[in-house]
Length: 261
Ligand SMILES: [Zn+2]
Image (cartoon, rainbow, N blue to C red; front, side, top):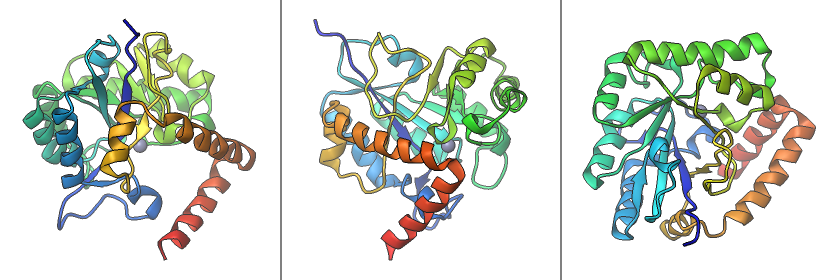
């Protein structure tokens, strides 16, 4: 039997009618799906015979057709919008929380984090303050990775095993500190499916963008066409490396605004 390849999907806040998003700039909004689009994607998965798995389940690489469902940032819509849909279809998921944002407007509060956990949905960590980890000193990395883990663990009373990198940025030190802190996996946002031979500290994920059509979503879940996105992404990364994160972000924001006009 062919080894199991699983695509890890990366979601963020969901958009509800009449509800303000936690951020409004175009670079943020392009990663935000309206709730009904998210629901139609989950419906497609169910109708197509896919299982929706948490990271802990996915890294066992079961043979059944599956995707891993992940959410970054810890927005309140994780609990009030995503969780009910996931439960409706019998799916699991992993929610990576930004520890320092919890309790601020639009993000989960401590009791909501406990509620998510009690529903059997998996809680992971997405740093303390959402910086680009590759820009930080070792001491700052300790706070962003180790202290954030401890803070969420104290909230839940059990171990947190999975970490995802803000903005997908990481380097060797990031992975080493995460491993030493006791994380079993680190997810980034590189466009590739994962298999049993993928390093658990370099799990690729495919960002779910607002303008993704349902047929493209289906192809992505089957792992088709990821190489094209991977090529585009590599080109973007090399531009980013040449410019540095700060200049790259300014340029990207300017281009996105222009694109919207
Ligand atoms: Zn994030």
